[in-house]
Image 1 (cartoon, rainbow, N blue to C red):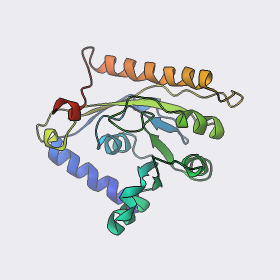
Image 2: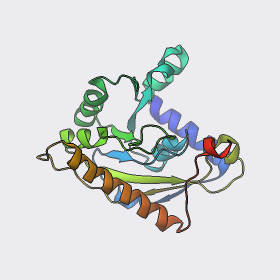
Image 3: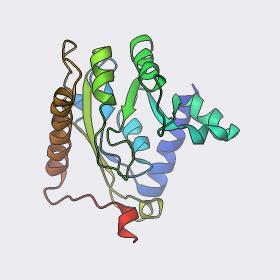
Image 4: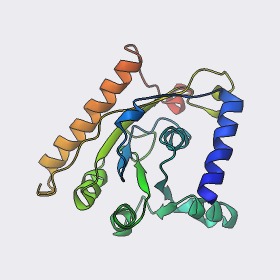
Length: 209
């Protein structure tokens, strides 16, 4: 109930500030649970992903520091977020999303690059997909990259690619993980190019230096 309320509130704010977003490829979204993955380009792209894939509900990882504030902790937990220590990730990084994907109606939003300032793919998505058997759905966000830029009314777009599966019999090693990661990267590139052949992501934090 709280998740639905927050989603409706965020949608209203997004439309008010930036206008109605554009969603492409929603027909690619599975009916059951899945892992929605994309390159992390701004702090609010998870919000756009969740709005774009509505009415599906999601869980997502958030750095544990955010949970120290009692008000923010209340909001995050009721919005299906769970804490992760990114410096020293423990077994819960895998166990929690696996449990949610298997035993609830929540899908999972993950950014394989870890943070929006890192382009290095992580293997967590691969392991979670293998353990749960749910598909991976690639997605990209194109649009304003800072809160200030949202007021420019430049159109924000989310595009979904076709889902793919990780073979549950596949051995988890560097070589096999690299193959799945390469498939994700290829999907991101194809989605970006289909939206805008000239698209090039520029990290706003680097742009300000």
